[in-house]
Length: 258
Image (cartoon, rainbow, N blue to C red; front, side, top):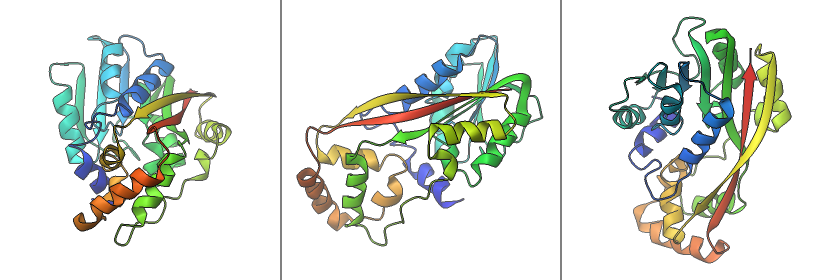
């Protein structure tokens, strides 16, 4: 299991489960932008706990089908449980980098806040193109801009962590809407459009910020803070982060058509 898959496997129980709606509104926005039609067959690559998967299931209806794949067993378990009673949904272990399906299997492939975690995002986009029908579409989302308090919080927490991980290195295709659109076109899509949506996250206090960061990819840092230093880390967050604790995050959505 790779390091990032292990992080999300360990975070699965808390993921989108600490009282801060974040991934669900982003997932709903991605599905809305993809203009999903009843009866379509869709692959959700890197489905997590179902933020994109479940609105997809509603959109395709009983005449369509949605397959969710994820490499983190905990995520597969939670997504499967969330899809109970939805016959148009199946969830299984699978690699979003190179999904193992026959060419031309899907009308739409979605990848919500996943592509930038993959070892080779351009190759993943090429793989998605091959899995789509001639009239197919791809819909991906990535971060456009963080609220300044989020990277500030990560810097504060890094001061209390043992051997903190280095800041993630972003692939060049995620530098701008133009670069991500260009990558989609280079993967063989005929057109690519970009849009942005914003999501606001409200926190009760610094302890809530700490809990939320540990419930997703930020767990890679939070897990390295010794229990004996957590109270001091939270107290420092309370002192140094600007109040009120309301983060606004901009999300970039790109839709590619074959």
